[in-house]
Amino acid sequence: MRQSNTRNLFVITGGPGAGKTTLLHALQARGFAVAPEAGRSIIRAQREIGGRAGNDGDRRLYAELMLSWELRSYEEASMADEICFFDRGLPDIVGYLRLSKLPVPQHVLRAVDRFRYNSTVFILPHWPEIYVQDAERAQTAQEAERTCTMMQEVYGEVGYRPLMLPRASVDQRCDFVLAHIEMSR
Image 1 (cartoon, rainbow, N blue to C red):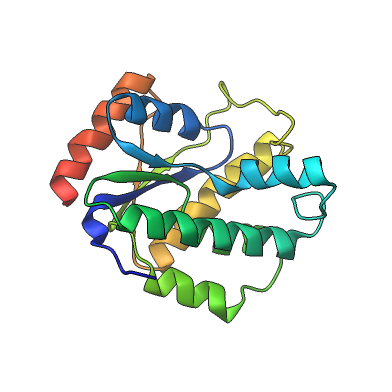
Image 2: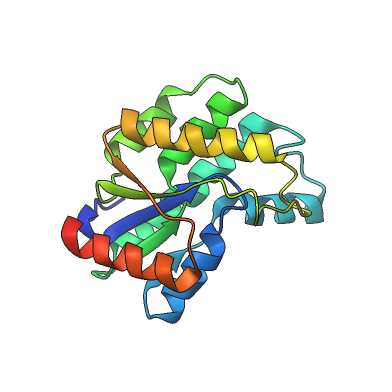
């Protein structure tokens, strides 16, 4: 797997239901490449085939599937010399395993160490006013808030600079992200 020029690879993370996907769609509409979130797609596929991986099933297997997805997304983005925004990144898997009270395997830590993104990581704060549960998002608001806190901690621990986005309109959030990527490249 090719190592990329990390200055072009930006992670957008946080707790569920904080507006990550909406922000990423807006950035995509402005012409930027986007790597979609692994979790939702894996959950949908596992339900469709009767698989056991997921938040309500085999969490270890779910983490391994997310690892595989994120490594593939990383490889695809690294082949292009353009800015790409990731809906979560490899360190999110560490946070997920910790939240699930599961051990973090060494190969996951090696992946986090080896496949790096831009040092600025955008964190969307838990936003109770917009948080809703759905078929793939079963977490309570409290779990969503804990997830946001965990992602901020994990990214900091593994050498990134977490930057909290404001609770603002989608356009304002896009402008915030774009202003900060120019400073961090």
